[in-house]
Amino acid sequence: MDDVKESAANAVDLSGQGLVALSPPENTDHLDMSGNNFEVLPDSLAALAGLTGLEAYSNQLGKTFKTKAAAISVLAKLPKLKAVNLYNNKLGKLTTELAGLADMEEFNISGNKLMQIQDGAFQSWTACKVLNLYSNNLVMIGATCLAPLVALEELRLYENQLSEAPVLGESHPALTIFECVRARAARPTCAFPC
Image (cartoon, rainbow, N blue to C red; front, side, top):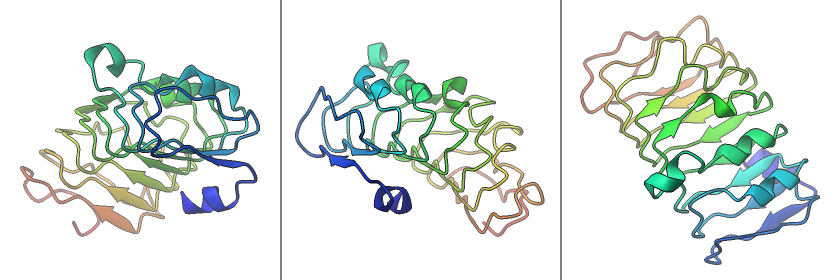
């Protein structure tokens, strides 16, 4: 996230202001909207065609049943996104609607209430280097779910309810950090020390 933020020419910081709506300038390429009261990422973000970095941690995304499905759907309209931080929200499911974000390099959705990651959710994320899924309620991760993440260097899965860790290894040659300590799982079958 820091690399994307540092390279931003038009970063906008709207963090910690108690906001529920926003209209950042259209040339914004990095937006920090963390520490506000958003239950859904606003549709106004779709106008930010050059947005490469988004910090939306510590909001209320997905707080109610009514907002869960649409909480982050606007991200699919932002194809240049490289880094997204959604830490500490109320998100419960990651679907395939974000699968087309081919430039994604770093995605943090930890500290939420994720119970499911739909197979295909990361379909085009071949450039993704860092994926943080820790501190959620994940019970399993499908065998093919992480396969597209061939550039992955860091994967954090700890503090979930995984019954087994995903099988990784030769298909992820750049992976150097794999944190998969679980509450319920027996010793995983993975090529890396857990």
